[in-house]
Length: 215
Ligand code: GTB
Image (cartoon, rainbow, N blue to C red; front, side):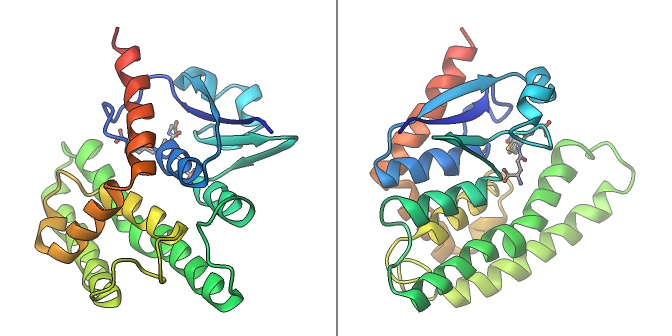
């Protein structure tokens, strides 16, 4: 079985591992699956050949033995369901962990992406000074609830699962904003994720791509 994913030829994140090939790489590393990476330029992403794999002209994509997938969450779910130990076996525990995967991507992440847009693309707008604190407040509302739900345990749904992989990936996108700093338990949660050997291997692999793009 050969697995091929796509990633930015030169990531605008400067090698910080914030692009969405990172959770896919991390899941593959957790599952112990070797993979190849096809690097794509922004131009190539918008061409029909890439859109046949990713209808929105984005990365990442995933190809495995005649199966092609897009959407990083769906790819991580596929890896978790079919390879390795990223989801519990017991059906109710599995359903609960899957709910947290969706919570990461559809409840916690949206205002975080809004903040990135406000920071990187709307900083010069006259209304940005009013909008940004409103977005930060919406993020804090999610983080208040997330830290309460996580409580003392190390991970969201028993042992480390794909839910933690996605939630940590989402929270990492707050890096540099300062918003996460008010949540020591969530900072520690992110640090626990980043300390996993599989995370470290995935991070190093994407950083090597970025470094090579700068040569
Ligand atoms: N919902 C899709 C998924 O989860 O797979 C979203 C995919 C997506 O947003 N892909 C982005 C992309 O291809 C890259 S990851 N963008 C190019 C385009 O749309 O033309 C998002 C991202 C980009 C940059 C940074 N950064 O610079 O920090 C972080 C995250």
